[in-house]
Image 1: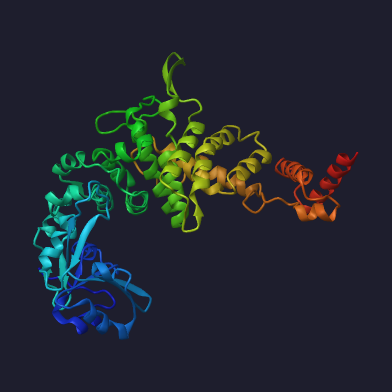
Image 2: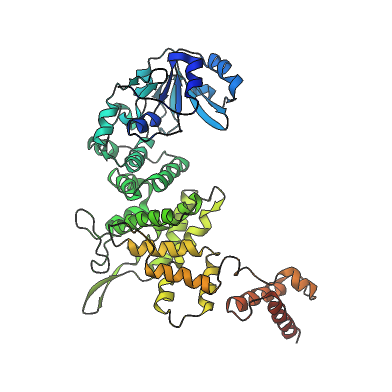
Amino acid sequence: MKLKASFRDSDLFVRLFNGDVYAVGGYVRDLVREIPSEDVDILIARHSLEDIIQKISPYGKVDLVGKSFGIIKFTINRKTYDIALPRKDAPSEAPTRGHKDFLISADPNLPIEKDLERRDFRCNSMALRLRDGSLVDPFGGIKDIRARVIRLTNPRAFPDDPLRVLRVARFSSALEFSVEPSIYEAAREIDLRSLSVERINEEIFKILLFSPRPSKGLEELFRLGALRQLFPELYRLTLSVQDAIFHPEKDTCGHHTVWHHTILTVDQAKVIATLTGLGQERKLCLLLAALYHDAGKPATAQWEFKKGRMVITNNGHDLASERIAKKALARLRIFSWNGYNLRRMIPVLIRTHHRLSELWQNRTTVTKKAFNRLAAETGGEIELLVYLDAADRAGRKERLVESLDRQSRWLLRKFEELNVSRETIRPLVMGRDLIKMGVEPGPEMGKILKELYELQLDNVFETKVQGLKAAERLIKRQKG
C-alpha cells in the first residue's frame, strides 16, 4: 500500500535524506484514516545524529534537548518536528518502575521494524517512507484501523510501562476505537501507583479535550482498573445509585449510577463548550468541574419517604463535592493551566452551580442583588456556571444537546439585561479612594471596604460617585 505524505516540509526531508526518512506514528495512522495532519514525527535511518544535525542546521533551528535519547527538535518557519533515530528500549531492573525507568538506545542501523515494535499499539506502529509513499506495517496496523480496534503491538512489553494503560483509554476515546478484550486482563495486574501526577494529568486532559465523547475514555479507565487505583473519589461514584425516576439515565447493564450520570454530564459539557466557542483553558475547567460535580453524592446518599415513595436524596452534596474536588486537585497537583486558575475555579463552579436553579425557579420575583452576589462568588465566570448547570441537567439523557436549553438562555439573557458581568462586579471604591478621604490603611479600612462592597452587590449604589457618598456616610458613622 502506498500513501502520499503531504505535510509542508516533506520535500526538504526527502532532498536531504532520500529514502532513509519516514513519517511515523499518529501521522501515518491518521493518513490511513483519511484525516491528514501537520503534526508529524520524523524517523531517519542509516544516518548518525551528528550527520542529521549537520544537514538540517542550515534550514532552521536545532534543539538538542533529547540528544541522549536519539531525538532532536528541528524548527523551520515556526513549525517544529521531532526527529528521531531508530530506537529500542528495555525496562530497567529497578524494583519499582515508573514511566521513565527505561533504558533507551538509539541505533542508526536498527531495522525500522524493530523501532516500530517498541510502540504501544498496532495502529501507531507504522512508518511511511517519504520518498515513494511506501508503507511499513509489520504488525497489521491498517487492519486494526479498519476494524476500529486497539490492539497491543507487543503484549509482553505492556506491563513494563504503566502509562500504557492510560494511553489505551485515551486512544480508544480519541479515535473512537474498541479495546481488544485481552488488554483488560493484562491491565488488571498492573500497578499504576508509580505514575507521576504530571503523566496522569496529561492523559486525562487529552481524554477530556480531544475525545468526541470523553465518556468513552472515562469508561475505559473504569474497565481497565485505572479509576480504582488513581481516582478513588470517582470510583466511588460507580458504586453509588441514584433515584431512578429523577435520574432515568442508566448504563448498558441497567444501573442508575452516579458515575453514568457524571460521564454523560461531561459529554454534554464538551458539546456545550464547543457550541459556545470556549477557549481550551476554560473548556478544560468546565470539563473537570463536570467530572467532579457530584463527587459528594456517595457520602450524602440516604433514603427518604417523600411524595408517597422511597426516594434517594443527597442533601448537601454540592458542598461535599467541593471539598472532595479540592482534595483531588491538591493530590494531583493541578494548579493553573496555560495561565488559567483551575485550582480556584473548579471548586467554585461545583459549589454554586445549583444556585442557578433557584434563580430560575424564582424568576418572577428574583432581584438584581441575587445575580450580583452569584457573579461575585464565581469571580465573574457566569458563562461557565450556566454551562455546567445546563450540562448537569442534560446529563440525564444519552442524546447530546444541540443548543442551550430555555433555562440557560433565560439566565444568560437576564445577566445581560441586568448588566451583571465580570466588569460590573468589580469594587467601585478602592483603598486609595478612602486614603484621599482621610482613612488610614489597616483593619478599619478593610471593614469599610468590605461593607461598601456588600452595599454595591446589594445594588444600593451603581456608580463610583454614589459609592464615594456611601463611603462618606460610613466614615462619619464610624467616627461618631
